[in-house]
Image (cartoon, rainbow over all chains, first blue to last red; front, side):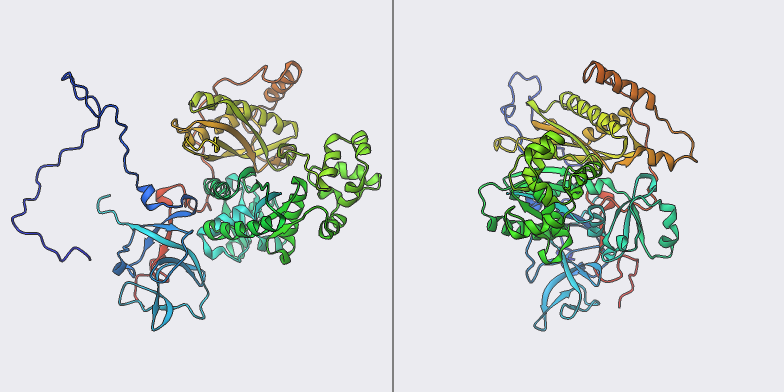
Length: 147
Length: 433
């Protein structure tokens, strides 16, 4: 797993106290001074604007299985699938292989396009001669550490 | 040019997007409470299973795995319909939804060739981006666009897109072999009366004397004949299809985001729709509420939501419809938008008498036909809206029987489509090859 191998310096103080919550922007108590932020409409970052470029063609699906762990897709992860993206080599796709939807990486293997896994136990599946249709391209994966 | 985009077997196609295994299989979608078949795939049609077949008659076939029967999943259909409308809005200058699965687009200033190219592009895009198969009819008028769409569906040579310019041989040949009863707005009874006068095909109607039609039949029929000649003269609203869906919508005098104002407008539309429903003795199975912001105001936030609420059983009761409308509005209303238009659509209609016949053996339901008839009479005599409904009771928690409903893949976080990373992963097969 990426990041797991990097170890923390031992003297790094781990926070035992809960971090203070960010306060809402607004009038600063009754100290007499109005908060300079009171006229400022907070413009919160919206993950949709980053991860959902084409809302009509974007669908969410849940991943099942372990064969894509090498590419950071774990059991139960949320995938953001954008059906408007043109598939290219290297993309992670939802492909329909013989009537079953699968999450795979579209890549060359020994010079020909294959659906590849991110796990040594699962060999690449050749596209040539198979009944394979594109369902959509995976734009992002959301792995929630705390649920 | 006017384009009509019509999804093929819409409900079944929505299901197949998320259940690819249903592709190529006979699939039916059942009415609320799993009563009867209301949508069929081409494969189910080929098995000669008619619309409205009671589900219990098909139980054997279903258990043997020969056919697939699904409970209706209106949340999914409503969301996919909204996506289809939005996709068209992004690509075309003007779009008007005509029913849950049919949309008109208006392409002014394009040549025929450009229109056909755009049609093909749209069809491909809808297939790719949404996974929905559609057919597109293009023509100078609504009535011809509908016929063009029909041809695009029937004849595989067109590959899903058919353009009729109204004057060419294709139009003539098509009109000559189309029975007049299949023309939009010409019902069975009217077709019989026309046949007496020797008008049997759409072509006969087109060639009829307009003044005679107006005198002997109606202005609408005279205009339909003109439309067949390629002269646009019927607005979309004139082309109501009362047997399939009833729509009432109107723009606000002043755009508004206030819940109560939007709700009031929708309540009026709901009451009017329910009256139309009773006039033609139909019952609705589902209610769709939709809102539009002003798409010409680029300075304002755009939001064109819809909500589809299934009714516990087919109904023409204004109170039931009002409750559904409020539920729908509560789901989609957001105060920060200025809405320009609101509408109510009653869907999946069923003939009231037929439906009641099928219920003879069941206990009387909680309906009040006399109350509704009385209100309609008073409103007819003393003017629209003389009697209207105040707040109705909050709806009881509806327990729809939906034993075979697929997941609501696009509207519920806990019901997303599950996709395996390797063959068999979904079915708990974790053993590695």
